[in-house]
Image 1: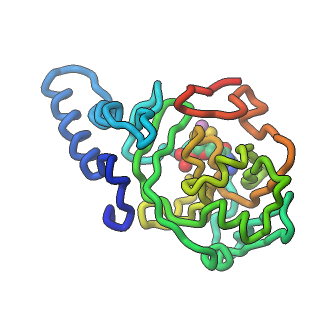
Image 2 (image 1 turned 135 degrees about the vertical axis):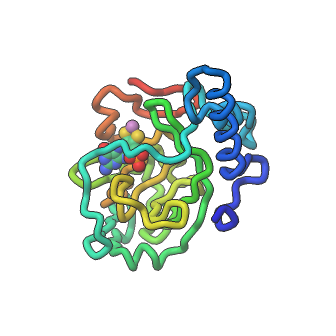
Length: 236
Ligand SMILES: Nc1nc2c(c(=O)[nH]1)N[C@H]1C(S)=C(S)[C@@H](COP(=O)(O)O)O[C@H]1N2
Ligand SMILES: [Mo]
């Protein structure tokens, strides 16, 4: 499965992480110390750097091997009910059903995500459509400066356009080769790896491009408006 989602060459693959995690767990048991299962992964990730020199693991984070379901007001997981609207500062507003989403260029990317509560999952394989592809299909206007990601039941998250248009920012419908599970936002969610994971709206229903910023669900409830994990922009 890893061969389908090759990690960046400079980064340790998830398989190696898992092996190191197992070793770390064994050592902790032998030593009679309390060490969380992910400690080996966390140490390993701390030693790694991103291509631009930042540490792979942002400060204050520890590594888990799988996403922790963080809840939220669930949307309809069925593919037949799926509808994604691309609206706002665009020339041709789009409404895509699930087939329409699959009809846009698909990418498979190995990406790290960082939850503000302190856990990170590194190098999971995400499959779906780049936000930039949606923007191009809808004819995004030069006046657009923010992307507002809309989830079911009114959840929103604001992202500066530059970050939304980065190649790793995507709408994902598969995780590690499997259709996205309901707790993680089935049938599709945003994945915005540059910012804390709350920006990655689950049960996605819309991407709205705006001229002005619109702080979203968590940004209006005490969390940071921007949310850069490397700057620890956790709270507003
Ligand atoms: N629609 C929606 N999306 C959401 C949330 C939510 O409550 N509703 N929670 C966010 C938060 S705070 C986090 S940390 C991640 C958690 O994703 P996960 O449950 O797949 O781990 O989803 C984000 N996306
Ligand atoms: Mo979160």
